Length: 140
Image (cartoon, rainbow, N blue to C red):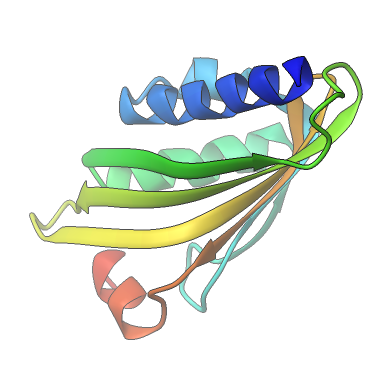
């Protein structure tokens, strides 16, 4: 049970770091060899390997959306007893943003995060409103 509480706390606090645009501290919660996968068929979509590629992606995200606000809704932990090994956390979220063109956009989705010794090794977003909506939100 303590493992689940620690994992939930780490993950929800990382959303706070993004909301505060504290990219350096946010990235400190990732391993150097981590992988980030973003859905869709836009320029931001794809698989990003390594902390530098992930940092570039999140910087592009922050540049595109000067105002962001993530609200984690449900956080589930695979292994509720493990707090020092590998674990998987899923987060259902609502994301309310304003893009650089001043348009308000809301994304809903789920992020699946694999943690190893408390740091993200792999994360993947599953966003429910994709395609044309996503293109417009990203200015494409």
